[in-house]
Image (cartoon, rainbow, N blue to C red; front, top):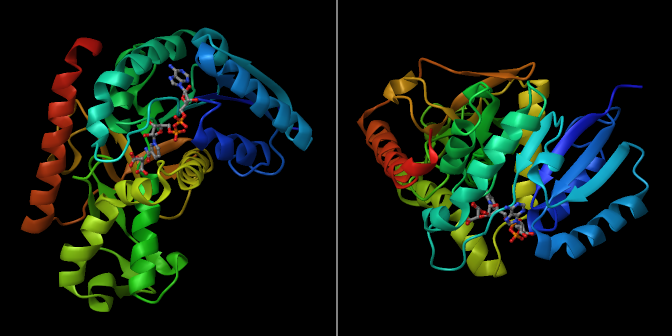
Length: 324
Ligand code: NAD
Ligand code: LMR
């Protein structure tokens, strides 16, 4: 029997967690033979609801759940955590941009960054889902000076999966036939979903779909998919967000052959200077990621990348007081 892995999840009573917790408990993230201890964080007004969620987890009698508790204290939730999923934050409503949430949510991530620094396992992996995810992840990592910045990432996997879904539909193909597709930049309406290097069943994607569709339809659909879901559902994406968080953390920990999209600390790759969390094409192996180098960027791609980088730098300025 493997040692249980401690998984801390914030916003445990929220919508995303209502899918995420149960799928992790079923083994979807760490595998069917990996026991877990679930450490759930909520704010005091949501503790009753969190208790209800924990009652349901107990009632599922999951074989892999070897421990479960809820708390409103970050230092308890992150104690010895191997994996921290930072979901708890306010979602946007209709007509808002994700960056409109910066004021409401930024403080959460400075407090939690400090608690992770002090209490989590030294080699913990942290994934920020709460919006605006990239800049919240930057706040968290800059409040965790004892940890390596590369232990933090922000979720771009939902954008990556949305891109796969849209391209597969248009090319009358299947998501598993698509390689070398990735999303650059911010989890926002400036993100750049890039199919210029993508292959569909081995054929260049831009030979399967026309360039006009790529520029005029595909890019805006993916950029605005979150808002379209809010309009349709009256609430932001939840099950697909949980699924993306599981995909990203599973691949980060267990590795993956494919090139994926992950927002990680910029390190100068592709000319993106340090100081922001930027989504790059990455490959993961054994809990580490590597930015895949060498993709040629034409003027169109470069201008899209510049736009999303500019937005991230201005988000950074808006929270400069929370960065150390
Ligand atoms: P929700 O409102 O249903 O749940 C959020 C939960 O977080 C609530 O239960 C709330 O009480 C809790 N919470 C608030 N502050 C907290 C704190 N300081 N500590 C612990 N818990 C706290 O929202 P949701 O639909 O689950 O979405 C959560 C976040 O994820 C939102 O910011 C949303 O915009 C974001 N999101 C991101 C992506 C992505 O791709 N990065 C996708 C979907 C949603
Ligand atoms: C999404 O992309 O679905 C989430 O970031 C929620 C939102 O506000 O769009």
